Amino acid sequence: MTKLLLTPQGPPQTVGTVADPIVTSAPGPAVLFSVSSARDESSTDAGIEAPLAQDNDSALANRPIAYRESGGDWHDLGYEASDHWEGLTPELRDRLIADRTAQVSREEYSATTNGASASMITSNWTYSGSPRIYRIAGELRELAEVLAEITSD
Image (cartoon, rainbow, N blue to C red; front, side, top):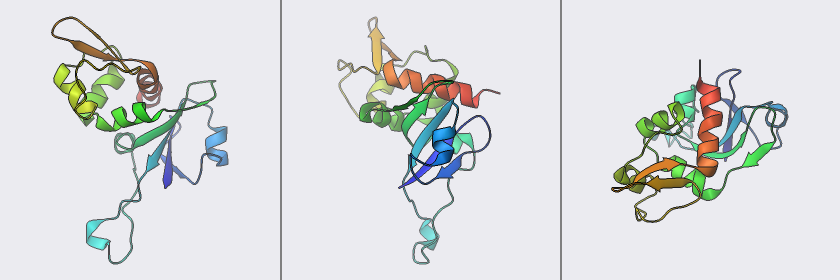
């Protein structure tokens, strides 16, 4: 599986493994994504792979596997936070990167967590009020913080 490194220093970079010198020397903020080897439908028979993410927005749609805060060590992201990140719509993802305290409705929460009960709280979400309003927490929030640093102009 291909890995994609996102840093503020330039466009996403394809890297071979987590031990790649580009990854280990990335000072942070940085995020490492796992990219499935999707193939272009029109060229499947030819064996030509679809191009990898060329910009931050397209990179963000991939599965995050690790992040590094500025001056920090690499932190492996838990499967639950990775799953929830993948469940975010592009609009909700942008909203949470822009404002890590943004409110998320019960419907958005349920869609993001793949239909999980709105009463189920994980270490990646908090809630308050009635009807419940959710906010990201834990690793999901830390990931959004790192991505906000990377994508801010």
